Length: 191
Image (tube, rainbow, N blue to C red):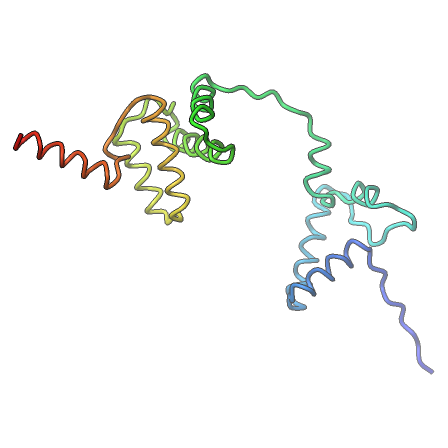
C-alpha cells in the first residue's frame, strides 16, 4: 500500500522565479538560497509572503499583496512628486550645454560628474581650484574607474570649468593643447 504525498502548492510568482532561474541555468543550491533570501526579504516588514494566490486574482492584486513584487512601477505610482530645486549655477550649466548642442544623456552625465566632484570636496564646485580638480581625477584613476567613466568625468569638469566658468587649466589640456603651447613658445623664442 503506497501513500501519496501531496506536493506543496507553489505560488505563480515563485514558480515564475524558479522557471527564470532554470533558464539562466542556476544551480539548485543557488536557487534554494535565492528563494530563501527573497522570502526573508518579503517578511522584513512583518507581513508574511503568501504561499499561493487566490484563483482569478490578477497580476496587480498579486503585486499589491506581496511587498517586493511589481518592481519600480508600483513604487513609482505610490511616490508623491517632490519639489526639486536647482542652483543657478547648475541651471546655467544645463542651458550652456543645450546651446552647445549636447545630447540629453551627455548633459546628465556631465552634471552628474560635477555633482560628484562637489560631493567629493563637500563645497560648491566653482570654489575649487585646479589642484583639487587634479587630485579628484587622480583619485578616480587610482580607484580603478573604467576609462569611459574617467573620460566622462574629465569632460564634464572641463565643460564646467573651461566653457562655463572660463577657467582654462592645464589639467584639461590634451596632447594637442600641449603641442600648440610648445609651438607658440618656440615661435616666440625664435621669432
